[in-house]
Amino acid sequence: MLKILTIFSAALTLAMLYAPQPLLPLFAQYFNISLNKVSLIISFALIPLAFAPLIYGYLLEKFSSKYILITSLFACGILQIFCTFAKDFELFLFLRILQALCFPAILTTLLTVLTRTQSENVQKNVALYVGATTFGGLFGRVMSSFLADLFSWQMSLNFFAVCMIFCALLFVRLKDNNTVKLQKPNFFDFIPFVKDFKILLIFCSIFVVFFSFQAIMSFLPFYAKTHFENISQAQIGFLYMGFIMGIVVSAFISQITKILGSKARVVILGLMLYILGTLMMALPSFILVFGAMFVFCGGMFICHCVLSALLNLNSNKKGIANGLYLSFYYSGGAFGSVLPSFFYQTFGWQMLCFVIAFLLLIILFVFIRFRYYYK
Image (cartoon, rainbow, N blue to C red):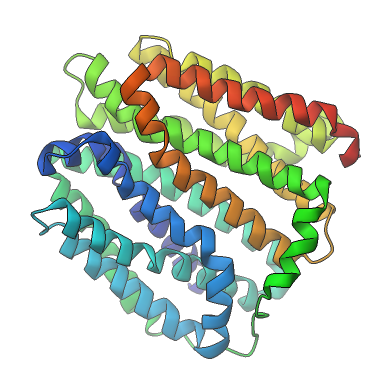
């Protein structure tokens, strides 16, 4: 029961994080704001996740995991409900920022609880956690679009808020287990990792990978709304179905690695698929863009899975290494959610796709050049 509730809560947290993404055109219209401003809804939500490894280690040292989890779940749900009553964008964004502070607290604590309860099945539990968060990102985008079409964007967000509060109530019955402490991070512990070129290349690669992912994901709804005649909000959400490739890739990444013979080759394959999918996104057809999303997401999740594995193979202090990895990952996402808005407004969707493909091509060439570092 505990494992099921933990996995469900992880999926729900990612669903809440990304539920507003396909609704961005609705927010822009409702609050009468520019694309630059509305993109901050996703960007500001990702920033706390980028800095979580530097902050939440201290919180988990001082307070019980149960206390942090229940408080964060309740706060996250209630703040989401408050968001739906906001009449001006500044208030909505302020509440969203407060809510975003809860996301890393929830995810960090859930993973801690999951790895403590069954220490003999850590690898399996972590795999389930990753699969759950991947599914949550897909479910949040699709379900929010469907409910917004059926009712309103307010009802869509409130659905996830009620589910989150329900999870908090269920966790009240969780037995507190705070016997294991997380090590407090020290700034100087991070320096050796960014001075090691092999590891720095992985960090830079994942930054660009997630920057590119969020750039396409964030501005796809605006492109679809503008260029596909009479498209519904539910159809926009349906475009995100390619996200299911994350679950497929997670399940078969070991077999793919065995076939290609090395993780470096798998990263190169992932980047090539990623570039192909990005270029296919520029095609002026709903069906073609829908198909391109599967190639695009497949390439992205291949890179994500294997770069993470390469990092752990090339570092001794895995806790600090993974913390930095997530910081680069979510920092890329935060920048990718807002910076491309200026380029999209000036040059359009097709040019944005070409520029993102060019950035990925640079990473591909660099990785091919230094692939022998990761034998």
